[in-house]
Image (cartoon, rainbow, N blue to C red; front, side, top):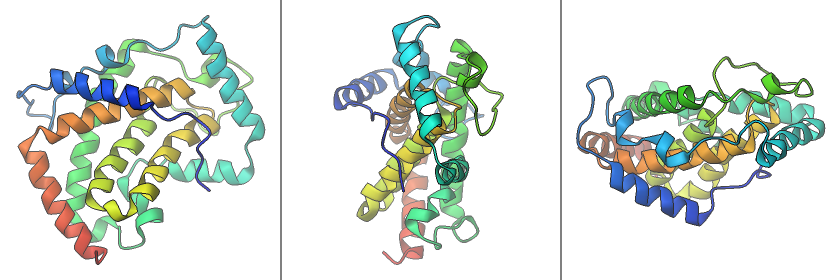
Amino acid sequence: MMNSRFPRVAASGVAAVLTFALMVITSNVHAETAYIAPEQVPLSALLGPPPSAESAQQKLDLKAVIDAQAARTEAQVARAKVTADLSVFAFADVLGPGFAKEHLPKTALLFSRIYHDSVASLEVTKNLWKRPRPFATNSEVNPIERPGSTSYPSGNALLGQLYAIVLAHIVPEKSAEIFARGHETGDNRVIAGVHYPTDLAAGRQAAVAIAVALWSAPTYREDLAAATAELRAALKL
């Protein structure tokens, strides 16, 4: 079952992200990125800092992680491990067995480039804030894994939301299921004890901004069109 216990990005927040993203998009793309460069979507300015170590929000964040840990079942732990896979082809549990990398080279290329560009932007922001993971700040947190990177914003939440945005554009017939699956990707990181809820919210806001920036790139739109034709044919839609 897909989880929805952690808050989604408010409509007003999405509108603000869209407005901001449209203002900061530029036309200069670095050679090492396929569609957009990190400075085209300055996530640190968009998102702002995470809660400070002694703030009330930090205490609420930590409580949410500990409460999720106390309530989690073995099935939820197993599912959290499955949804930690950052390949877009993990969405095959929604789109079916035809959604497989070996049969979809154009789709694989599109999402590989999206992943690369998103991580480039994400790493700049993570390195700026260096928020420790929940298990690094409180011994009560028992994570199912111990990632070495920092916590804010959540890359899993970002990619889950961003993949969902793009996939729902390609396969609108399954948009509800796709977005639920993308949201689960983030939610399960709190259940896993490796992210705070505010990490998820920031990651999802970043995904919307990146999606807007991607649409400004002609090469992205070309690759998206090719992937759309390929994937819809493979899924017989």
